[in-house]
Image (cartoon, rainbow, N blue to C red; front, side, top):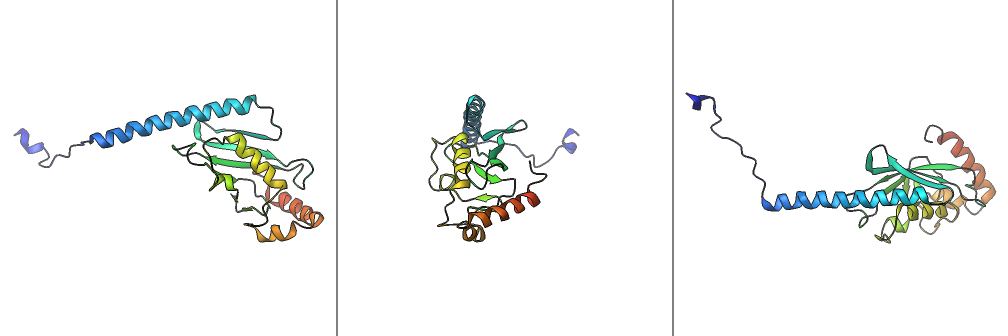
Amino acid sequence: MASQNMDPHPTVSVISSKERSVNQSTKKDSASVKKRLQQELMGLMMSSEKGVSAFPDGDNLFNWVGTIEGPEGTVYHGLTYRLSFEFTSNYPYDAPTVKFSTPCFHPNDEFGNICLDILKEKWSALYEIRTILLSIQSLLGEPNNESPLNVQAADMWATQKVYKKFLLNHYEKNAKGTL
């Protein structure tokens, strides 16, 4: 009678050796990425770089929040921008996804998406979070107007006085609540 209550088509979970190997490899990759990110966090905490910082967003080492202050001598001086970083288990071989969380009026930004070659085709595993932060901070004062995402900002860039007035108005309207 015991056979009455048994499933005539039992499903057995069989994991092939290839799947097991992939799972173990992913865990190793994830552990090495976490170790690298922890080292970068320590480096950032010990760094004397001014105007840039980044920390994990809560307990998840694969999501970070960064902050950049506008560089002195630029129209961005005195403004602060928050960034989001998302890392894959293939970091540092794949660039992280980095976006402005604080709306940024800039020739190389549109809707938070940043057009910066080191985040795309010029990415190198040698780059670190600190490198990215400093590059974006530098980009604020030195945009690449040859390939803008925001054509309006690129067109306005030549007249810094007009650009700064528009930028400050944009920042005042949109930055609140993001910092």
